[in-house]
Each structure stands twice: as C-alpha cells, then as structure tokens.
Image 1: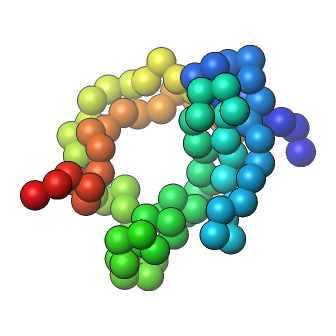
Image 2: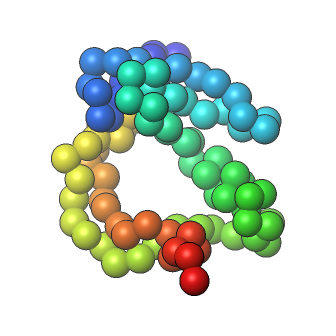
Length: 90
C-alpha cells in the first residue's frame, strides 16, 4: 500500500499508529490525524458514549465551503463544516 502524504504538510508522510484498537494515520510534522471511514465514528462514540453505529457526520454544523486541503486517499478537496455540534460546551 502506498504511503499517504499529510494534507497540510504535503511532503510529509502519514505514519500508521494504533489507538484503542483503531488504526490512525498521524503526521509527525504538524500532529495532524487522519481517520479512515467509520474510525472517527467509533472513537467519538466511545468518548461520548454515543449509540453504537451513530453517524456523527449528521451532527456537523453549517457547510463553510471547499477546503484548500486534499484527501490523502482520493486527492479531492474536502468540504469544510463547522465543528461537530456534539462538542460545543453548554
């Protein structure tokens, strides 16, 4: 499998690491994290004791446009949303 590059740093490879049974890619240069499909859902669910299988993308806030960063997998630009409403302190 080819090495993925950090979307932010461009020239730095993402390093595969494991956290609580999930494989996460990390950039050692900027500290950025890359989660594969459904990994972020499982991790957020564990941290927030959410229902099993909850899709946290349904909690995204307002769409803010297209990012200047590209996906390390498909190389397409990301859509940007406000942070998960789930994490906004009350």
